[in-house]
Image 1 (cartoon, protein in one colour):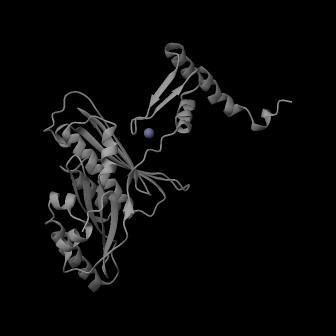
Image 2: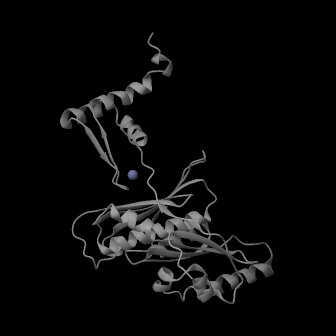
Image 3: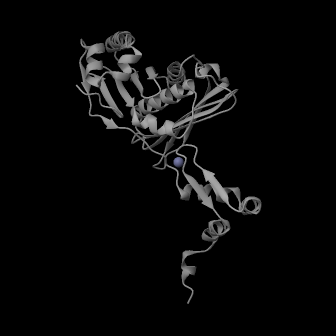
Amino acid sequence: MEKLTDSLQRFIFEDTPVRGSLVNLTHTLQLALNKQELPQGLKRALGELMAASALLTATLKMHGALVLQIQAKGPLKLLVVECSSEFGIRATVKWSGEIQDTQTLFDVLVQGQFMITLDPKDGGQTYQGIVALEGDSISTILENYMLRSEQIDTKIWLSCDGNTAAGMLLQKLPDTMNQITHEHDIDTWNRVGHLADTITDEELLQLPTETLLHRLFHEENVRLFEASHTKFYCSCSRKNVAGMLRMLGDEELKSILQEQGKIDINCDFCGAHYQFDAVDATQLFASEITPQSSKKIH
Ligand SMILES: [Zn+2]
């Protein structure tokens, strides 16, 4: 059986409230890493957080974007991953100073905060949750967050070897009313959790989904759904950059132009370069105040 890369696959345990998903990011990760030179430990952290973003997105009924962010003092400043409901993922890291390849994310992170943002594109409210970083792995941080903020039992396994990132998520949907079903559900949850805990990094990264599910849960009744494709996708555009510049204001832009002759903006996620000269800058504001009908000059 061939390994399906760059995919997300949902599955359920039939007649139980336990559901799950598996993700593999290969080209998606490599394209994200192409844009930045990273020490090994940060590469792994970025890959794991990207895999986690896809797994969490798969649990949401939302049209929009999920943003996972780690902000910290110390050598690591910022780690951001954004995943759209279509599994278009982008990611970036900001860091400074010396970081050895042997250092993990947690060696270079001081006073970290974890932030999760849900940004619906269909007009819904933006949601943001901020918590202190609790745990010594990205999966533990997310499990704690899901339990404390969302009251949802979640288990997450993540792995990244620098070329591929992979992950698995199990989640128990909120309780049913019935006492007997309730106990049965908890039994199922505990049992599949223990079975899933036997997974190795190698299996998570390399085994095809069907083989992996069979290896872990061959005595359970698992239904696997069709795979969704994941890809590297950056939502930046000249229009968005123009909007950002407009917010800086006319005065600020004029002073940058006076100093540098032009305004250069590089996208941290994909490396795209946007340039605005004095004429472009004037148009930024002109287009805002001139009504469309004024185009008729005659
Ligand atoms: Zn971009």
